[in-house]
Length: 335
Image (cartoon, one colour):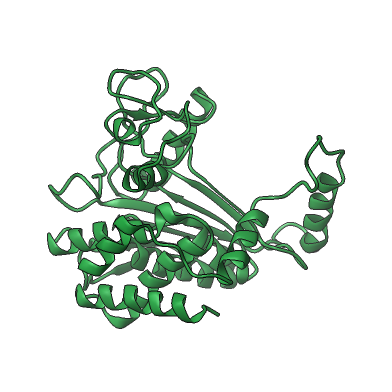
């Protein structure tokens, strides 16, 4: 339950989307995703992006009243044409569809084209995990990452997200971009006057930089060199090539490219955990226990699995008011 001030902020965001012609239902989806990002500690995917979404709606690059079509490919597969909707809405529809399918058939696959930036992948993965499903979420993004060996960016930061229920525990949710840091954090740093981590990006001359503005004009670096580059490529194939969305560097940057809709692609895969074994709940707990009981390096009190830190941040932030930097507060007041 949101506290009074955060509830007021949620309603403000909801009304901003309604003011920009989204339905009440769709505005609730968007506002929920943005406030969730703030609460889990990912401000780079929260309020700092609201002005961008509104600008693209005004320029008719996001359709506030899309006619989204769902095509049945098979019992377990659906293909969604999002009709240039805001990414939150098409992804929310997609994850709910894949949950419904997987609950019925054991496996669900939903591909989405003609969508846009959808915020945090973990926001959608969590919905499936809460329904007792194992889930994979993939989405491509505008050029930011230079393929290994190249001097120019082409792949997006293309996050990979995986989630599984953990009985009697916090859901296991891994949500990671294949770049050293995600592009949203660089934009957030630029917006708030902060530096970025050395080794995460190069300027336009190919030199390492901690200046977010120079990083945005240069290229971001993948995790683990060739391996990270390969993972970015994989996600571009899964969510771009396979779905009919933009791919190979053709997805448009939502902040800087107003020449047309983004046509981002998403791919959701959901599975019942007990497809192959009847005691999955016991086995996942055993798996986690085996990791957590390992000897710890100095200074580490607990070996955490993906999702635990996220939940700690969420519970902590639920108790206080969401902090809004002045530059972002000014944006909100002008929307």
